Length: 156
Image (tube, rainbow, N blue to C red; front, top):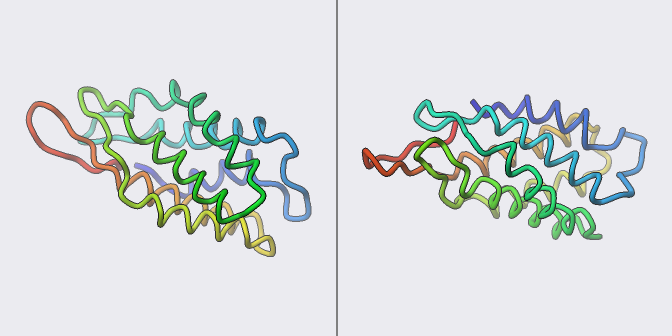
């Protein structure tokens, strides 16, 4: 089950700066930390009882896609780019013979992530929860298709 509390704890611990501290100065290191938190969280994802087989293998790809987002100097742009990177990460994940399709709520997730990045007055825990909730919205809006038998299953 994709529990946003699990992702929020990882984001707070590994990615977000302390309440009174600056953001990571190194975008690739920050992207790696964010990708690690997401990949660890997504590794537990299942569709129709079949676990995600590619979460860890696609971590580097996610990190690479996150670097430009984390270099953006605008919260709205960064939020949308992070959501797009998450959507691309989810798309093509393998659940045994099933693959995930494009998430339908990428723009909604991007707006929520942007709001969390812009709300510098919020405590780190609240920002982590908001980003995790947005990541969950993006992830669960993807549908996993299985070739045999022909049915779809939501990512959980």
